[in-house]
View (cartoon, rainbow, N blue to C red):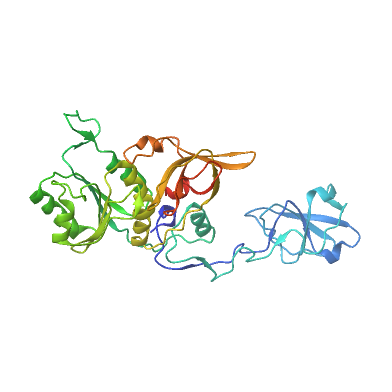
Amino acid sequence: MSTATAKGRVLAADVASPVDLPPFPSSAMDGYAYADAAAADKSLRVVGASLAGHPYPGALNAGECIRITTGAEVPRSADTVVIQENCERDGDNLTLTERPTAGANIRAQGHDVTTGALVARAGQRLNAFDIAWLAAVGVESVSVVVRPKVALFSTVDELKEPGAPLQAGEIYDANRLALKSLMANLPVALTDLGILPDDRDALEAALGQAATEHDLLLTSGGVSVGDADYVKEIIERLGHIGLWRLNLKPGKPLAFGRAGQALFLGLPGNPVSTIVTYLLIAQPLLLKLAGTEAEPPFSFKARLAAELRHNPGREEYQRGILSRGADGYQVSVSGDQSSNRLATFSGANCLIRIRKEDGHLAAGTNVEVIPLKELID
């Protein structure tokens, strides 16, 4: 595909530079180019100019120099550039007020990269800097990995689309929209199946069809042991559930398996649990399917501003507000940490990781924090 439109895609093959960069010796500064051996008396005659895109066509003789701009080609007959601040010009006469060392202010051909050198690797997900680098060496198109097909759906009859009138016992479907937004920049081809009915036969038909057309079925909720939670039962008929439940808070009721040839990932139904398990589990899985690896998120230590309560037994990720003061970073939880409270993400800028063996943590304790911007792709 075109390099210009490949941002976010994963390379399918290594890319080597087809050119030297720069492709010629170039000036690192605005000034005057000359042969150092010819400038013993610090007096030179200006015979022309080399501008970016318009090189000087001839060769320099002893005692001659040319005006040169940053990035312009240095003639092979020159080996030094004096910056314009270190010389004085009077018409075509140039006097060096400070003589640079021989070879100064010239970037050699291939200074940045040489022909055949690797500039991007298979499995690399291209960002804006990569696109600039590929463009700089003249790569017009690249081979990319086919995006995995992901089917996203919600179940449960109580869910309604935002904007629809709510009847008794109904709520709006926030989880599916959150997942769509979180996946928006990933190299995946997403199909939104909407809200599927809590009807065993209809649900099995929909998931069976989706499994033949997609690489991954992704949902939230519908994998518990409730009377009308049919998803887990249907996936087991279509394939199998290989993992069910994690020793994690929030996010215990998570299911992973296969439906036919498609993978299946069922995230918990509570909104906070959905988001946290997406960030920690689903997103790395999606990147793996896309042909690349998720980098471990950057984390560091911060002091608790107040006591943090935790019962040993499960690793927990609480939403936090991280700030930096005179004594370093400190963090506080963003309110009640119940897994249904999306409000805990309002104003939060990090997750606080609490080890499963930890109990209540006193104010001033150093804890591990992961900035949310490190997790949100």
